[in-house]
Image (cartoon, rainbow, N blue to C red; front, side, top):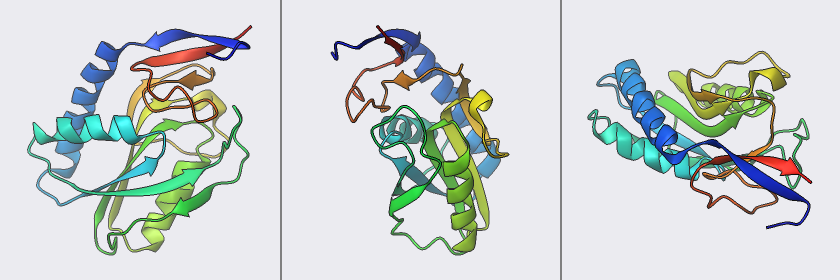
Length: 179
């Protein structure tokens, strides 16, 4: 652990699991029997995406899976304001339904930008799912379609979210507290 901060639990493992099951049910109702491509935004969403994908199975939803990598934070706790897509999808999106999955919606820039890009690639329907939402930090007008938890304006780590590429392995969501 870094000497300049500690962390305190915000959302437990059990709360996360329960909410993911609820999200999977909502997503299944939204897409029904339609084919869907689940696009995970790396790196932070990888654990959430895996658990959501497994939960969708119980609702007979079997999406194709793809990834893209976007960043606006780097090694900081504050968004740079610039969204960089460094790894694009490999499945053709033209005429497809897309479910974008991300760990957190903060400024709204990343999801708004990526959603627009998916539509430019010809996607029919683009829906977004985030584990956490910080509407108090919104810099652009944007609301995800599926939200796991609304959280306060605190820097969080764990369950895939990092602090300078560390602490993704914490199995719950924690708030970083500077000493």
